[in-house]
Amino acid sequence: MDGSQPLNPFLAGNYAPVASEDDFDLTVTGEIPAGLTGAFYRNGPNPQFTPRGDYHWFIGDGMIHGVFVEGGNARYRNRYVRTPKWRIEHEAGRALFSGFDPRNADPSVAGMDGGVANTNIVWYGGRLMALEEAHAPFELDPLTLEPRGYIDAYRGRVTAHPKLDPETGEMVWFGYGVGDMPLSAGMSYGVTSATGEVVRREDFQAPYSSMVHDFLVTRSHVLFPILPLTGSLQRAMTGLPPFAWEPEKGAFVGVMKRDASVDTLRWFETDPCYVFHPMNAWEEGSLIHADVMEYPVAPLFPNADGSRGGDASARLVRWTFDLAGASNQIKRRPLDDMAGEFPRFDERRAGLAYRHGWFAANTGGPGTTFNAIAHVDLETGRRATYKLPEGDSTGEPVFVPRMAAAAEGDGWLVSLIHRGNEDKSDFAVFEAQDLAAGPIATARIPRRVPFGFHGNWRQA
Image (cartoon, rainbow, N blue to C red):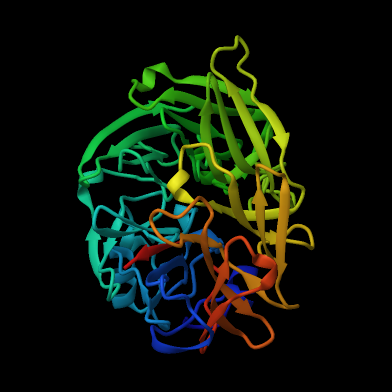
């Protein structure tokens, strides 16, 4: 980064960007299983230059961190996602685009594309796609991480959290803030076929403009949570926060059959809360169950009047929708009392009844760093936890099946761990159902990997 660093918590410590793109052969401790052969990709914000205006963690330039595993060995490569925004600023040698507040942008880029592709990275249909929720997927070479560009077939915004149907091979997705006006209540519902063809994109209006980070998909239904982390262009143009916690708007979840028109959406209601990430959802007769990481208030964002928002932790909660009932109220039941985020599961059970889930946990209360990894057995109700050494933090834990035909939950968990006392990072491998034993292998990255968002495994 250039110049002096602002006193912003998301530009300090292990949130701070790294300045270099590197290639390292990694030193392995323990033994990486022979069946674990492929690539782990993790996306996250890494601003190229000192940001303009108030920096929010969600708006930094995307950087992919790849760990490539073969024959028990591992190598690391990181590269920026070279979006048009990144290239324009790289040539200028300074930040030109703003974050959430368009008033902070340099006049030279007024009306230009500011995509960062910094949130998730998904392998689907023979394409490696970097995703964020304001643009179409951005394709990368899966080995070199070099850019291939936006995929125009999506015709606009696509969620950072598409769902891959293990039965049909479809990718189901949505977009929010769709339309000519920024921060609108417009949304899209979309489907990509197993062959990689975009076969559906249909627009509808949500009850209000909301930051809809993720959604839920079952075998037959799709669910859109509209929760009161609201967007408002009018608010932004008066100097107040573009996105803010506004609980008086209420909380809604739109439910529809996957093959039905958006005109059939049925809106269920619940008390104000916020969810960045669900774990999974499935059907049981006329009921839909959805396990989500629920916050009582949205963290990381202010109130609508600009005052500081609340600090909160998420906990695993089950939402139940009765499609045959007369009531549109969502039933909520806590499943676990440990604070956590980044819930994952064996995605061969996506949209289906399942038993095993994992998440990054925080044993010390609210915060955006996590000092433990938890495994929940939803059949027995038991939780197993691996607490990291003091000062260390884990990223999102990702499940990898031992083989294609393995039983649910039989496999490994992989994650990036920041070793706080050394300021370096490890790629760590765990037996997914024996977390307490600690990592069975670690591959040392000779510098830190900044905290980021989501990753996925691509089997060789």
